[in-house]
Image (cartoon, rainbow, N blue to C red; front, top):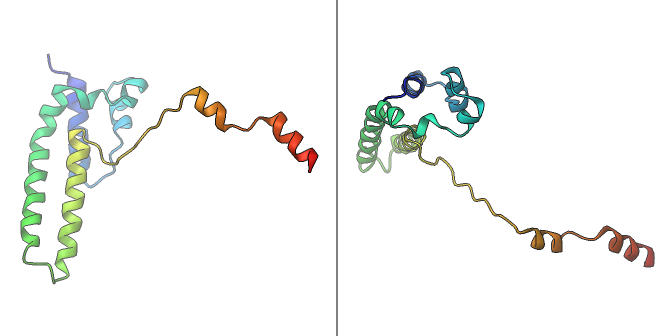
Amino acid sequence: MASENAKAVAKDVIERVRNSKKINFQEIQQNRGYSKNSAKAMKAKSTQSYQNEIKPIVERLIEERDRAIRAMKGKISRAKYRDLTDAADKLTKNIQLLSGGSTEKVVLINLSKEIADKNVPNPSTSNNSERQT
């Protein structure tokens, strides 16, 4: 069964893209009935209903990006080349954003408590060393 909420989220996202408005997925999902936690976890974007609704616009964005890249070949020495690269960049980011891809690279590093504790100075030791000087 298709999720009507996810479809509504997709339609709101598409409308915002068409009107060049900022997309706040959490806000859109909450406005369409998702809980705060579900919206934060981007639940709608992972549904098949959302993907089915968003697919046509993503395909059009891919076509436009590819067209801009093809047009760049003859524009390297002209000012319009800059505009084409900007268009390709924005289209790629919109494609990634709408299709659930990553728009930035975020690396998380988990440190074990033991390593973290070794790197934190012991307050009693640091006070003693200050007194000796």
